Amino acid sequence: MRIDILTLFPDMCEAFLSESIIGRARAAGLVDIRCTNIRDYAGNKHNRVDDYPYGGGTGMVMQPGPIYDCYQAVRGDRDCHLIYLTPQGKTLTQERVKELAQMDDLVLLCGHYEGVDERVIEEIVDEELSIGDYVLTGGELPALVLADSISRMLPGVLANEDAFTEESHYGHLLEYPQYTRPPEWRDREVPEVLLSGDHGRVDRWRLEQAVERTLERRPDLLEAAEEAGELTTEEQDILRDRKS
Ligand code: ADE
Image (cartoon, rainbow, N blue to C red):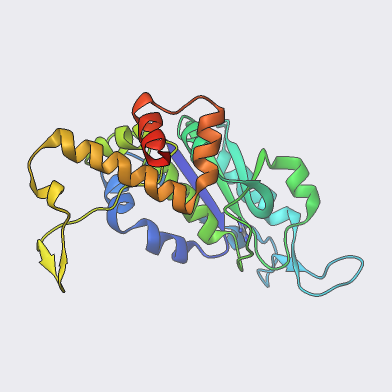
């Protein structure tokens, strides 16, 4: 899969994308992520890519020409799906991440200033996505969030295939708590069951913890799963036991 990020801050994006799991995945050729500077397509000697908003108001608006030219150059003759990161978009979900991970050529457009001239959005954007109901200074962090969440779904990127299976298994639940050595730290002990070596008990305990956490922190997730008939019999048992 190839992901192109169109941005005014390619170095900022590269810095993140060169580290850790994504950095290794890129080096191994599992995902091809490239950052392109929209300013390289400014087309004027001052390298300007923004201007005052028609109708007045504060802030600057990114001009349509440089974004359009940058996209055409990056796209070449490929058929790409262009996503504009904006608080105006639909909220990103794990479900959408999984769908996007099936695509071959994605382009992520990062906006800045007060926004982007609406005409270039109409002309080239296929989808607008938000990463949550808060406003950031630009689309770079959202584009990196999206690139990261998609990359970890690609075959071979995560060392441990469990990260996948567990996630689909516990799809509508929050994660159970994790522990590692030492077994005792600042008078806090690792739960005894995790040291027992009894995989059946461990699995049951983890599922109970996941259900408990979800009830406490995100009861909406459980309600939605219940309504959609997605709860396993084991999960239904735990919920029933808990009520009685
Ligand atoms: N640009 C600024 N804030 C954003 C957000 N929350 N999601 C996506 N793009 C953004």
